[in-house]
Image (cartoon, rainbow, N blue to C red):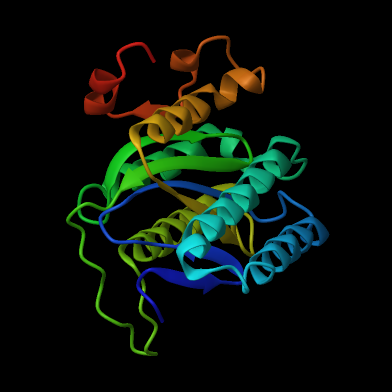
Length: 223
C-alpha cells in the first residue's frame, strides 16, 4: 500500500509525508448511506475519466477532482440531519481531550471545531514518522494512524457515556492536503466559522468547542 495514497472504504486518502491536512470526520448515521455511495461513485467516475490525461497534467487534475469530492462532502454535512451526540458536553470534552492528547506524538494540532454531527480538524505531520506495519501487513500513514487512534479511543468512551452500543464514528472520513498559505487561511476561516454559519454563535470565539493554536493565531492576527 502506497504511503502517499490509500483507499479506506472506497474514500480517497492522499497522505504525502510532512504535510498539512484538513480532515473531516462524522458520527455514524449523520449522512444517508445512499448519499455517501453517490458521492463515492461520482468521485470514481471523475477519476476514471482522467485515465487518458497526459502524465504532466494528471497530478493537478486528480488533485482538483479530489478537492471537488471533499467540497461535495462538506456541503452534505452542512445539511446533515442525524445523531447530534457531539452537542453533549461530556461527549465533546472526551473528543477534545483526545485531540490534544495525540499532539505532538501523532500530529501537530493546529485547529479544530466540534459541530453537533461532525468534526473539522487542521493538523500537520511535519517530522512525524509513519508507524511500523501492523501484524496483518497493513501500513498506515502518520495521519491514518492518528485517525485510527482518535476514533477508536473516543468512540468507545463516548458510547459508554451515552449508554449506546454500536459504532459511534462513521468509518469513512475525508482529508485534504493544504498546498499553500492562501489555502491554509481559507480552510482555517472555514473551520472556525462553522458554528457561526450554523447559527450557533455570533462570533467564532464564543463557541466552546473550537480551538486554534497560539502560533496559528499569531500568524493570522486578524482571524
